[in-house]
Length: 172
Image: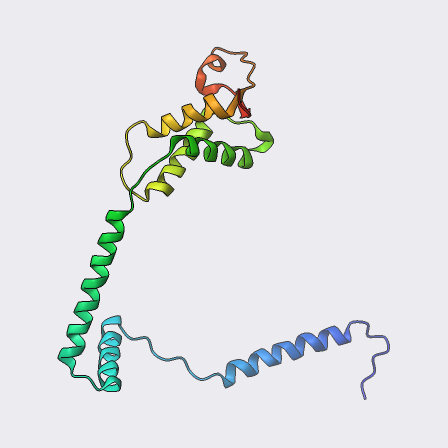
């Protein structure tokens, strides 16, 4: 029988030791890991396994694979052709203003913050396609003219420049 008188932390030590022994036992009873094999070798093995389990001749299996690849490529091309990259400047202005307002501390921001978010918005909407030159500036101009209030009190010459005006969400 264990004496626990005078040992305040003995149960905690036992729990830690038990957990550590469980980890060691789990590691020692685990089966050994398989050796890694190159992807080309795995593909050959998977193909042979598919042919063996399906009972279909290898030339039919190869032709099915080619048909599937061609169908997938055709479907992808049709989807890409059908999706038009249309950017609605008004919706983008609302989205950009709301995002900048939510992310900026105190709800005050400059034009450069809107411009950066407009470029992120275009990258997301266009998914890597080319955009019309100046589209990000159009979005920022729409956001500033319809969705933002100028709250700046310029004290320097640089503060008079439009890029340094301090804005907050709102609108005329």
